[in-house]
Image (tube, rainbow, N blue to C red; front, side, top):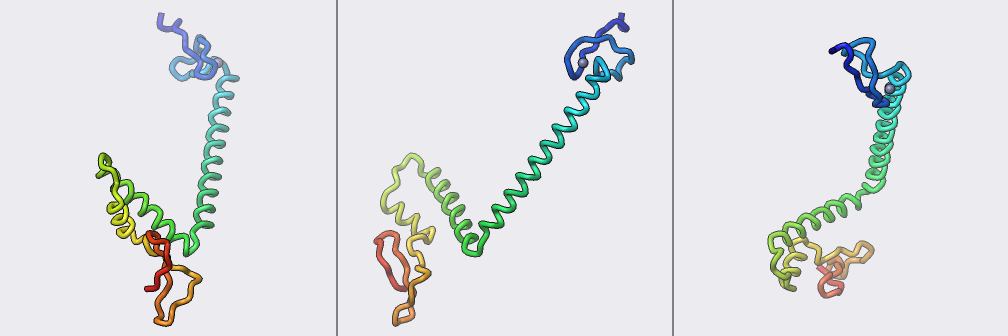
Amino acid sequence: MEDNKLYTCAYCYKEFEPKRRRVQKYCSNTCRSKAHHARKSLGTELSTQTDKLATSNATNVKDKMTLAGIGNATAGSLIADTLKSYFTKNENKPATVKDLNMLIETLQLRYHRIKNGTPDVMGKYPYFDMLTKEIVFM
Ligand SMILES: [Zn+2]
């Protein structure tokens, strides 16, 4: 009885009578080699794509990582994280102007140093005040 039990081909899913019990997974050599090639080429394709992706990501990151960019990226993720935790904590309360001002001040985003501005007679640097939209020297 046991000897007549049919196996299912692991490639074409047809039932077949195995010539070698327990070791034969495929109905024929054709299926065995097709399955082997399919597995091999799929693996190669995937790893190639992963390599390409990793390479392009690394290149992009490197390109963007100028000295100025590092500060911006850090500030960007800091803002995102802080906003998220801030609004998660207070999600049922509407944010007031005071809240927002506090948030902006906390993030030190209110004053932006104007890079191409020249210092005043007191040697103070110009900053753009995000709240009043005015240039201030400090
Ligand atoms: Zn087969």
